[in-house]
Length: 141
Image (tube, rainbow, N blue to C red; front, top):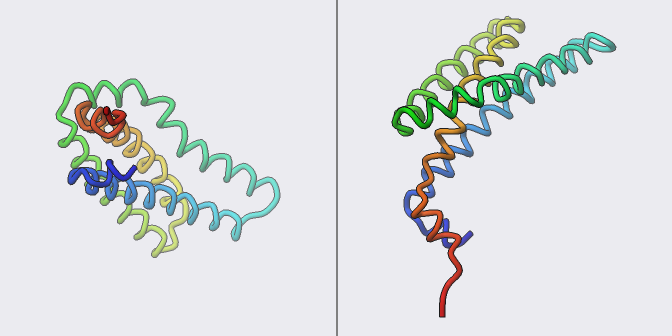
């Protein structure tokens, strides 16, 4: 791990991953806490399952198209476009919460998950084989 952290380009990559995860998980936690405080019983169970489905389904349904896009276009361009999309969707979700439009924020969860589904393959594909081999290669001698 120490070798990884000495590579200058690793830090921006790790920071981008952290911010992406922070936004995705933060939104999921906020929306599930809102469900837990607003609903109970069967409605709570159904809405929680729906949120989890909205977050998971784009990864399952879009893994092939997202991988194709990551292989067909420059990964940096995909990452920039996806990151800006995440900013726009996150601001929309924040505005929806601020206005009390829970259902709009709830439905925008799907958009955030779609963004994340396209962001992930490009993010992982950006790691160059040469950097990975330098990190994981056992020292000789």
